[in-house]
Length: 325
Ligand SMILES: [Zn+2]
Image (cartoon, rainbow, N blue to C red; front, side, top):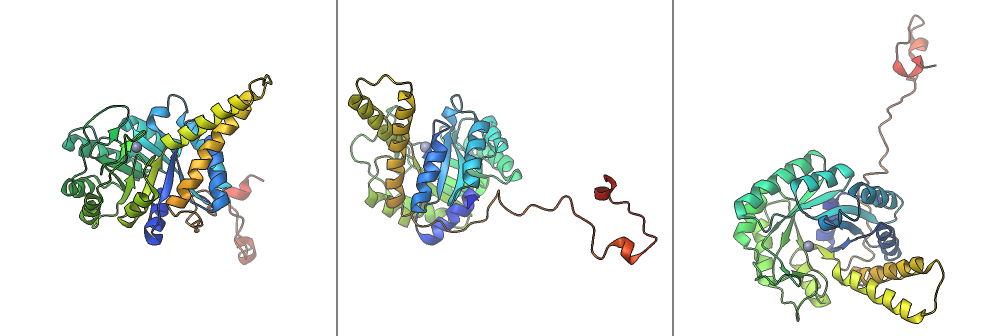
C-alpha cells in the first residue's frame, strides 16, 4: 500500500475512531521490522525519528530505508520527525523525504513558539509536508519539572495563527517512565478539541509509554489520532537482550551481536503489536492515496495516433522524443 500523507492517515483515524502508533526508532534496522509486524496485523503506522537521534541516524539514510520499506508495504506508512530541535532540522527532514515534521517550540514563550512554528508550517506546506506543533510543556522522568498543561483558548489561537496540521497537547502526559500512575485530564482534552474544531488540525498524545489501555481508549474518544511510543519499546528490547545473554553465557560466536539485535527488534515489535490492539488500529489498513506508487506522468510520450505524418504527408517531425533516433 505504501507511503501516505500523515494527515490522510490521521483523517482515516478520526473517521474510524482509532489512533495510529507513532513508533520512534534509533537504528536503521528498526523501520523494516516495525513495518513487517504492522503488516501481519494489518495496521497503519507512523515511523518516527526523534530530533535528538539525528547524531546517530542520518535523516537521508532513515528516509531512504523507510521509504523503500514503505513502497513495498501492505499497510499505509508515513515518516515523521518528532521534536524537531530547530527550524533548520525540520527543513533537513522535509528535504530528506519525511512526510511530516514536528517543530517543538513548547519551551519558548508563546509568541516566539507561534512565530517559529509558523515558519516551519510555511516551509513544510511549500513541500507538501504536514507540520506538528506543541503547546504546553510535557513532564519528563529525566527532568523533574512542574507540568504546564495546554490551555484550550491558547490552543485555539496557536492553531489559528500557525496553521499547524497536528497539535501535541499536555494533559498530564509525560516523556520517559511515569512516576506512579499517570492521570490524564480528559476534560481539558475535550475542551481543547472543541476549541480547535474549526481548524483542520489533528491531536496527538506524546509520552504514550505507561498509559493504560482504558485511558488510551478514552483519549481516542476525545479525538486523539496519533500516539507517540518510544520508552516502552526500548525497555522491552533491552529486557530481551539481557535475557538472551543470560541464557547463552558461553556463546563465543561471531554472530552474537546479530542475535542480540534480533532480540532488541523482537522487543520493539512486541510492544508495537500491543499498541496496535490498544489503539484499535489493527485491521484498519484501508487504502489511502499512495505517494510513491502513483502512476507517473508520462514524460516520454510516443507519437500521437493517428500520427501527424499520416494526417499530413508534408508534416516534418520536430518533436523532441523521436529526434534522438
Ligand atoms: Zn514526545
